[in-house]
Length: 257
Image (tube, rainbow, N blue to C red; front, side):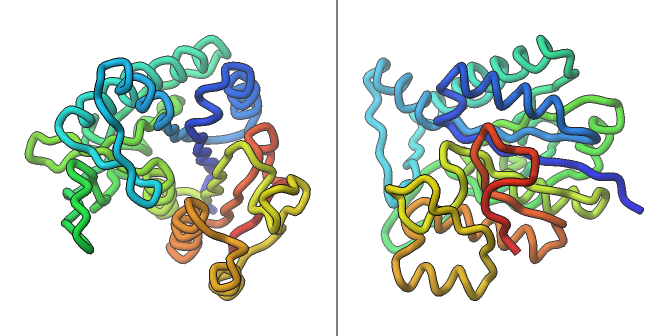
């Protein structure tokens, strides 16, 4: 029987709020068994870029990453945000190690090709996750904290969506562990009505997802999040949950199945 492992992805809005981040890390520390944390940080990257006079460009909620922005996200994701989270985990007695995809070759990707006239620049689509390297770290009693940065094996860092990092890492680790993937963010789950925080959809299947997309219940940035979640389920991840950052015990939110 495989050992249980919980992979939690925390969004940038939570990372930006010290009180919410502290509570999430307390709850994360209380999760039993093996653990991995994946974090975002897009809002902080936008703030730092603005201070440096670098304009942030977005297409359909995705960041265009030119050379200047790549330097910003590498500094912010791999440095400022990642090491802050690691330090906060250490303060809670959790032995954590911060990683980008380049560290230990844990996540390799290729640069996203131009599609429909959109060049995303230095954005990476994941090719493989080094689950052996990650499991070695985990079995040493440490918690990997993954920043949303990968590399192409040719010396280039690439900006990669944190939800995708979480999904791909969960899929790879499911070959070794019994994995639960939790996407934590500022809502109680996937909502039927974005203006009603209590209108949580408790379960979403492939068929449900297609219907909710068609009728507009699910739209915008929630679409790729659920696509990543469904891909993880299809690849053998035992449970995928989208939940409020303060409710990551596995008993709340929206179950993707």
